[in-house]
Image (cartoon, rainbow, N blue to C red; front, side, top):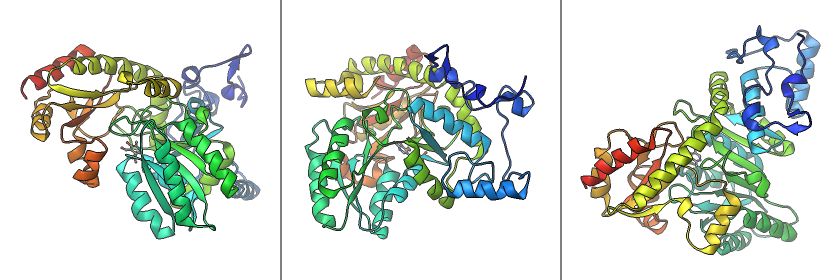
Length: 427
Ligand SMILES: Cc1ncc(COP(=O)(O)O)c(C=O)c1O
């Protein structure tokens, strides 16, 4: 057999498109380039040898021109494991291109620093991941960026109001360059209408002459259960640490979108140095092979757990997307999300004392922040992940002392329910 670059980028068979779960086993890697190894080796090498000085010159020229795939240079710019992970992630996202980063925060901060300049403005939905919020509120103003937040919710009036307020704030010379949404929002599963945000971006373009980019943090449902690029978004952002990594054993992030936008982000990633390392990228390749199986299994488990909790007398409310009420909310869930996913919050009857007694009594389910792993994790957002927001803001967005967030894993669901049951009996 001969090395044939076309065969390992094959996406169709007999005129039919191959599904991402099939392509995860092969796409972008030719075993014949690596002694026939069925899995890509970990290319644990900081730098790559040029065959000739002319090659080195060409590769640097291609990189400076933003080419997606210049010859291999140096692992801060490119590395085989990183590139295969990026090619495969793009398939799940229906994207022209993806970039893998050292963390979700590296992806988010690099995107914002690429698309925002002094005098520009951005609007974003709240609640949003704490690290993102702090980057927007603490770091970006030091670079002259203005912002307005609006509360997640099915009514898009807040989003439009934030845009009007921001337009007044930045004046004639500034432009709204970014709309950033985290939907569903952590931990309340509040939704933002992605299509309405895309429409708003078009409206803003009519007045300011340039369309703001619509960025979606797709960590909670993506890339399987929510496809923001199909709904009019420009870039999907990820903490791959969560569902994509899926085993609670790595930290990574990603951005997926049109090649032209990813090309703009690449030099910023090269300069900030937030690329995914070879070993982490290799772990992501391992994880992408089982992504669909894991997300399907945990979503099926989550439904059972949510139904159990909903019927339990010591649970006041379950914020599970599958229990959406009201015509508009149901319609939005149906049009935007292919599944209710497997991370949701619920209120115990009582407050912090009852929530803590319940959490401390769990025996199988682990008390830890993060989500999207094979194991079920549970946490108390008001005192941990969201404590930085302060009590007043937490209460306003529904992060009360009685609220507990669970990320349901792939264990036997009856075992999880037994653990929840015995812990609830003691509060
Ligand atoms: C929704 C969301 N976005 C971004 C991040 C940041 O990701 P990372 O911890 O990989 O930097 C997190 C982390 O919890 C998150 O939950």
